Image 1 (cartoon, rainbow, N blue to C red):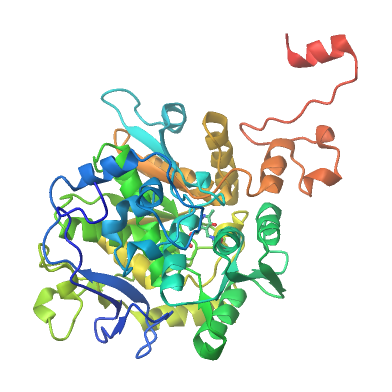
Image 2 (cartoon, rainbow, N blue to C red; image 1 turned 135 degrees about the horizontal axis):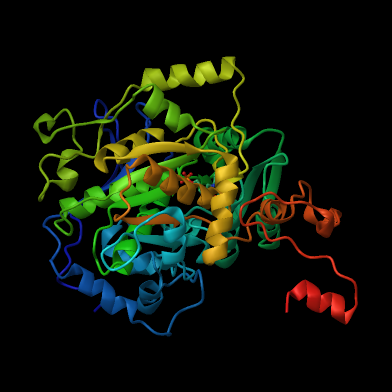
Length: 515
Ligand code: F0G
């Protein structure tokens, strides 16, 4: 079955649209934008599909999943059907059809990730495991080419960059975005600029950006400061033609929707009860909400899972806004057509849900001012989610509304403990991913997640991202691992597994082996 399969309707119109219902300005997809020119709010990529999708849509995807070989080079300027079918992003291309010609699509074989049922971990956390019991799944996004979920978004954003003829791309990053940007840049021959905070990037990640040839600028400041700068360059210096690759770019989020499609695929198209994800700049959770709203509007699903966004105690802006200040998203209604132009985007089936809406923007701004006055700066061991002002906050509120969501915070100790548990029972993950499992455990204890629920925790990055944190947990060493004598340290973690110092002597070695 090919991309032009007659059973799947193509959109009759694709635009970028402001999600502020009072504005709802529209822009063609042919121009790169990072915000609404009229009101500054975030933009969505919205599709007007003329009809519902066929009920056998997932069969189309399964056919594509059978592809073998015959692929062009990674990042090639002419994508083949088989390269697109091989990609865990573009296998679902009918659900993100913003491109004019499928041959323009950029793919490096991203999204071939792994949904693993994790019974041993589930038991440890207190789930009822068994045929009748709950099922905890881990979605290992660290298996992407650059080692994190970011590749899903980069595939889409680089496709858009190619569509608009961008020759320079840039991002601010705590690590994973820079690695993803740099690898796509290297494979497509695009000039890349990476802005990282001073001392705020994990070494494994910095090494990737350098290795793949990105120009890396270390700015005296944190992630928020870097993002402000790079956004300023993209928005206010258009003559430089620098295309912004952070998740404020709506095309990035189109690619990240596919993480949800792959979870459904891994569950044989069953809908889980819960999706649990760490929240930093809130791009992922925003993309997940949009994915499910669209699937429901297209008649492909009739139930939406609940969403849990997990933040670190020391980096909890969404938690404050959602749980303390009680801010909520108010979606527009199709009755508002004329005032809200967004509704036609999903009109075929769903006449009650709209992509745009409103929230108390002034309260968010006031909270940011309060944080500034109090000199409150995000700080957590999970540096990937160490972010003060998450750019996708409005879209995250929309996702929480659409998915009947909750927001929780977990401590750094819980993060590293649960990261270690994931490693002990599986393929491992980096710290921010540990937050999603720690959050699932906390919600289970609270009784919000039931012990027999089906839960998918997103592990956003690879275990090798932050070796200092991992070595620190297993040895008790709180410094660069290579600089200290690991064996003399006293770890305190529940599943710490320190190396054993032993003389070069056979009986001592056998004793240490415990055999
Ligand atoms: N998990 C990992 C491993 C990440 O790298 C990030 C973000 C997140 C979670 C947060 O995701 O923004 O969608 O809520 N890392 C960015 C970076 C900031 O620069 O690599 P979000």
